Picture (tube, rainbow, N blue to C red):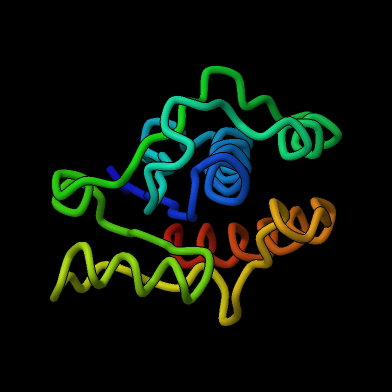
Length: 143
């Protein structure tokens, strides 16, 4: 089982978008039984919230549902459980290192920050970045 966790600030935009895009890719490849995929936040700001409506609409435009998502914060158990933990930007990386000093599983989702659409409102650009990152990760994990 390949266990993948995506992390962003509030777990209502970027990380759940990545979670559901990756799930869609895995499902289309017929590999659902080989992956466990989830997403979390570094902050507690949005705990219990669903996917932010503009992010949900962006996913829906591409035929992807995010029904049932509930924002939660990363835990020490997550660090133990997941094999691959990808953060969306350098701010997330700093939070993770402060929360879990010495943890070595954290990786950048892209070679650059994925702009937070919560602040910039460009969900199409976030969609493109998420697809690029998920494609790269999927290819790496299924070689």
